[in-house]
Amino acid sequence: MTKEKMEIEFSAIPSEHVLYVWPKVAPLFDKLITKQGHSSLEEIYKNIGINKTHLLWIGWEKNNIDNIVVCLLTNIQHDMLIISACAGINMKDWVFKVLSILDNFANDSKCKKMHIRSGRKGWAKSLQEYGMKITAYTFEKKI
Image (cartoon, helix red, strand yellow):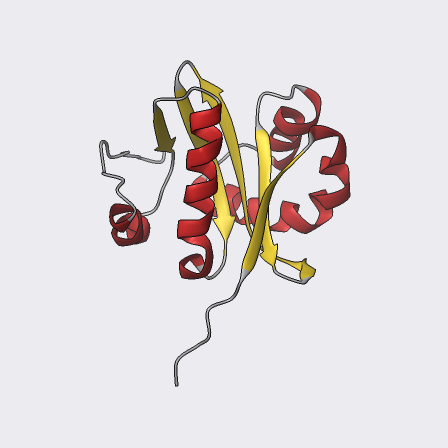
């Protein structure tokens, strides 16, 4: 039996509304902090809601706003849209829709490139199907 693909909605959250969705997205970002050593939750919140250097995007199951399946952060540096953090579940249900919306946002923002920072190896196939290529590897050693 094949699992039915979930339909999602995806949108940027204005900085003045971040506080309302933070309790739902913080646990997803907390997993990134634990697994990949990203900034603290406080630093992420500060970049979104206070400094306004990053934009929070969320994706939720259509007709069920309580079921957030993806959250990510973007910021623009020069002519590049950077996805600096991405957390979620069931990537195959949302990856192409999310990237298409981000493509449009990047184009409207006059960006010439889109980068995903701290991506995982398991994403490679889906991202390559979308036309993205691997341009660098990150090496790490704990001290």
